[in-house]
Image (cartoon, rainbow, N blue to C red; front, side, top):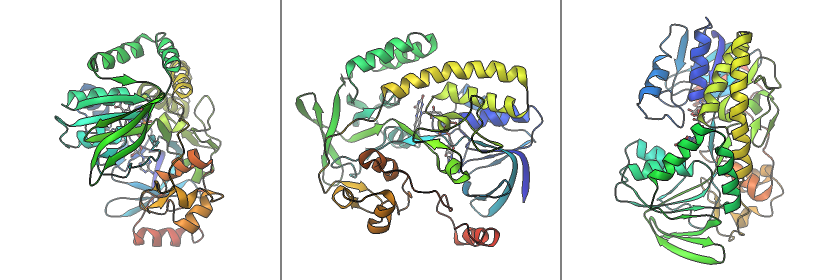
Length: 416
Ligand SMILES: Cc1cc2nc3c(=O)[nH]c(=O)nc-3n(C[C@H](O)[C@H](O)[C@H](O)COP(=O)(O)OP(=O)(O)OC[C@H]3O[C@@H](n4cnc5c(N)ncnc54)[C@H](O)[C@@H]3O)c2cc1C
């Protein structure tokens, strides 16, 4: 077993800054992420000055990085079972920082399982990984602040953005804009995206009602107020803002809400020695994630003056997060047809689910959420569609090798 002062789960901006700030105060840190490199969602594959210096700061003898490593189980006595590409390890911590980030909320609509339909961030990730987008016609639809940077990114990479269909109403979006005006940096960022998107049709109060195509998406039907439009396109990027990754916190027994891990102002969860930062603490954006990385290091190391300084910064960022949460609420969508797929791993349709009383029954009787994504996509969708609460989280938290499960059984026979 390896022992660390602090284990950080998630090497996104929050986790990276926490690791660097903890190591600079002499702490032995382990930084775990399931991706091949640090960077999280926003810095995946990005090589600019900010990301290079954040990555360089992790080259410290006090920081051990575990990439391509997944947390499989949280165990008693402050231990984690993790699986690396070749092995499984038991890690022990004095303090645990959950920086597990967020994922997109994807809500089903007719045709959303066709190739060519992706999440908004998902399409960006594919293009960052090398998928050619030049000359492709893209419709971006749904809701959330992610729409703007991704649309600008895709356009810069040569995509033809056919239209942006945002579900929120104009007054709501204007209120958000007025709120942003209090923060010059954010306003500047928003203006820069808007400038990059000059000429792209932007529709508010609009949502996708069906995506058409046989072997690939070729078109999308959009409802805008009383009117419907059919748009021809190659890709549909669809997303309904973000939901935090709560499974690790829930498996530890930390209190959570559907939108955040519950913490104090100083980032402590309801379980001693466990902290939460970044998007896992509620969707707050990049600057908030970075500030919370610094704050958690100051709190753990009892550095009172740094705590006070970063706490103030976090408070400001969280005020913006509150405005984001109030603006980009998941929409009330029109009723789904019975044959619309809800669980895309196991091909379970709305008709098979709509009368199920809860998530557990849907899993047991229909295999909803039992496929490779383990409910990461349809779990949040069914919470939204049917109001189902999440089931108790049990190990393994991610699909694991048999050898890892055998180790888990040997350590904790009642865990699986
Ligand atoms: C798909 C997507 C695209 C985005 N694109 C943009 C953008 O273009 N512009 C923008 O301003 N903001 C974007 N955001 C928002 C932005 O990513 C966040 O504001 C910021 O990255 C938050 O940082 P974080 O460290 O809290 O989380 P993240 O960056 O999400 O990092 C969390 C990390 O934890 C890892 N992880 C989670 N669970 C486990 C586990 N069990 N085991 C191991 N590792 C785990 C994840 O793989 C991830 O690398 C995007 C978000 C998403 C979800």
